[in-house]
Length: 66
Image 1 (cartoon, rainbow, N blue to C red):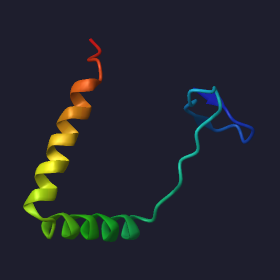
Image 2 (spheres, rainbow, N blue to C red):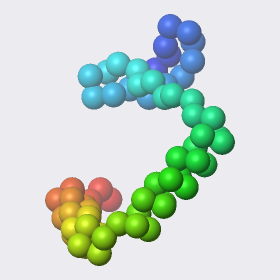
Image 3 (cartoon, rainbow, N blue to C red):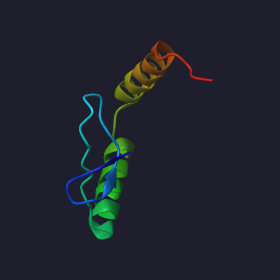
């Protein structure tokens, strides 16, 4: 954690600079989540299988921390 110029606390990225988080209005967030869910419902079986395979492959390539 680092103190920014405004005195607020924030996390640091890989270069040591503070990261910025944007605020999203809760109503906009809900709308975006519903739109994303709708897009996934109408996704083809082929695309679903490819995405699931790639998600599994990417999670296997990361080392597990204990």
